[in-house]
Length: 308
Image 1 (cartoon, rainbow, N blue to C red):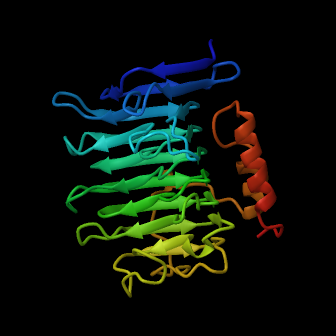
Image 2: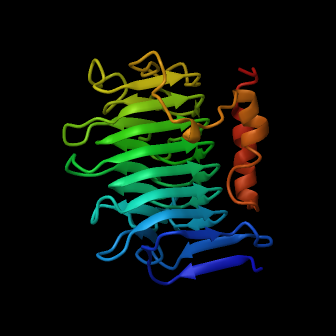
């Protein structure tokens, strides 16, 4: 019934199953969750000694980490929302992030860390962040599995759009737009990377659009840096229908057929023309700020004119 801003004075830990946090009915300007400081106000979905976090939906909310990319006035702790399944493996699963908007986060906007399974991130916007999304864990043991990233916009972030690292299996990236990833002297689009001797595997990368006026050769990376990954890449990666800048090196997958996905988990795949007319008008929260609408207009204008 109410729209506006909620400032979180402390971190909000969610370790409750069968939970929906849905801001879709709020009137204009929608609901923004804003951190009170660098250290305070992150939302972390994780597990506890006597609790689990599963069957959770987070929808139509904006998360503002408060990081200033111009002055770097905030620390590396300006995270907004994350999934953390490290402490109690097997208890964090069946999570959906739908139509969310994350901005000004240095890290974890959102991250998937530790043992996390059955996660969908869809129809969302992540922008003006340092490195918004890492899907990873240290030690090479805990696994992130059955992950779908589809119909999202990653724009004007420095890197990790996303970074997929270590023991990650059965992941799909479909119809995502990754745009303008150079903020400082470095930056890249997406990367599949080794962690403790383990590479992500069984991945579909289908009909995604990568575009940046700077560092276009760093759009999609298999390994540490473009063209310098293992040969052959030690995992099944299917790539088809993607639009990379001509300078990008790692344009080809390692298998010729898509990784199998159960019928109930399949995602509708749109063409580039449909991404412009169907996807871009619909991503993020119901009510966009003027900044967000200008960003979407900029991306639409930069998309190739040809329909396929």
